[in-house]
Image (cartoon, rainbow, N blue to C red; front, side, top):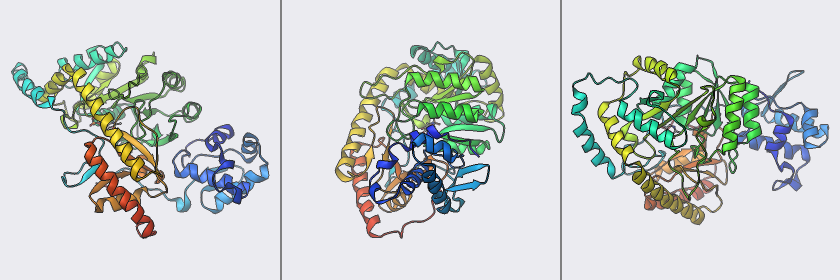
Length: 484
Ligand SMILES: Cc1ncc(COP(=O)(O)O)c(C=O)c1O
């Protein structure tokens, strides 16, 4: 069991359930049951949560208890609810269906394929000169053994300075360099989580974070993001208070995959609620540099932290290049020392040469990041234009930063579409990859990291097969498989 949802919370999630399209043709109980099923399918209502008692929901929705009783009965019959007399009713999917969302999620080396499965840019032109400058610096390090478990001091200082410039005073001893943000997450989990510990994550979220959590045998509980508005403050804070997870993993800046940006007020409240219930926060800042349209990014979540509850992780992959494999953790100095001790049992240290390349790139950060933002805005707009032209039924919320948009499709066809797309040379990451339970079939993540012309071409191919899927009916439906 994942906790429970209260009557007022469910009422808020259900929103205008009584005024949905086609509503006039169905009785109240069926419309209510249909809306609950919709919330489950979209991942906004997690599996395994206890629904409010019938009377409580009836009061919250201002409808008769008989309607709620009939809706719950209907949900039991369709396999979306399990009830035990006197104990309550829990959400489920028919046949106890659960699709593993973790597994290998790697980029392809097939150059013919338009790869929309990976949300990362090619290297910036400045990378080569940074690499050349780094080789010139290397002799300074060659007289030592080359192991720096917390990272070379120059890079730790550069990363600390970047935090300070964002309004969060940071010293080099609060920074540990890692081999990518993913590595940073894994190390933090090794330190902070025992097997079976509960971790709250957003749904949808970054699939490789789910893989890292599965690797540490975390018990995962979710906060469903609304497609248009993102985090629902009352529900997120309520989940923290009810579930009291050991950790929460959040991506507040241009969340992967939805692109949402968490407002300052919620950041402050999340930190306060986490502290009150003893939850540590892992804040993934992978996309923090990539704001567009003049969007102002609120202060770092750690700004509101007075009790060393927040560990921030980030890296070079999104603004610069994933091939560098450089990331970092920002935590208290003692936590950094503990992480370094864990790390010695994993990979000892990150490569010195790559860290020097990172130092040179960060020295030129202003110009490089400005170029990236312009490039991403052009590509995003090309993608949005192609979608509006070729797939006008799909709904998208325009992301104001980051590298991905989260499209709401015209049916629960995301996995079928991804399989069909492979056949026309487009690789897609279907919605269920970003959730836990095989839900999110009505969503698709689309990164805008490829050149504009490739994005337009990819959307054209996707549109063609989308209409083919309708013609070939249900033949393409199969179980979701691991995409490797
Ligand atoms: C939210 C998030 N965290 C972590 C990563 C992994 O980043 P890195 O390449 O720095 O390991 C990614 C990459 O897509 C990401 O989107």
